[in-house]
Image (cartoon, rainbow, N blue to C red; front, side, top):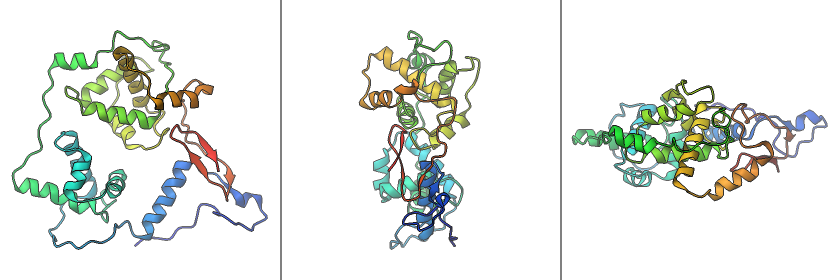
Length: 289
């Protein structure tokens, strides 16, 4: 059963004369998560109920189902939209379910039983997920070779970063869907650009953590962010590709400090009147509305 919570601060129309009652000291991503969780508490995390005659027992927990979904989609057998249509769920429910963490987080979401049945049916039918193509060493080396490009500040481990964390996650996920790419090889390659020296390693957990964040500045101090930026920027220069509109916007947004900070977390606290709201744009800039 959901438990009731007190609000973080007066939301509007406060009649208190105490100025402190009108101050909210929470970053926008915390407020967003908090009020999203309140909404989830109101319906106990359940999607709208639908008629369902399939009452087979579910023997996997939510995290296991999420791992199966991720592995299946990474195999390339289906795209996300096709998978959603196949298990008959909408994109909103799918997005909510995949963002959760914990063995029981999402057990009221329609994606949980639908995805479990999908994989259970495949198992009973003897269908196995396609194995990822074995990558040849030469092909892998060609794919990752950006040695012919040197960026300003690269040797000092101080390359200015002009992409948001969300954009970098998109690039990484898209790169993993390409042939001749493995996660292990990617981590080995980007570790060459580690600001503390090329001898440093980047663990798969750091990559998993970074990919699990959401927000333009969430994960900015994770070394995967900086190192993957250097890698993809060198690749962009090598291939002669122009800067995207998003890239140009990021440069304009963060020109005053020479790029996005990768040394200090920038998801700190903000102060604003309780009857105002903090809005974070796609570049990570916060403003009071």
